[in-house]
Image (cartoon, rainbow, N blue to C red; front, side, top):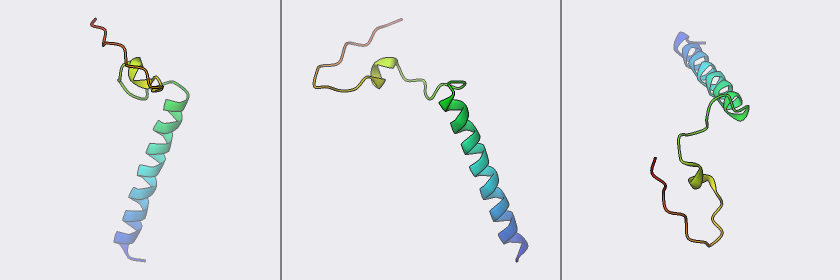
Length: 55
């Protein structure tokens, strides 16, 4: 195999491992999934959304 092919495979595996590590940490609650307000995570059931609260 060409050296470039090996480099592309290595970089792909490193990126995939990093993504999976971050995904597992997020699922355990170690890292917040996003910084959106909780109101945006509530399911939409046809009701009008609450007004945004200011801090």
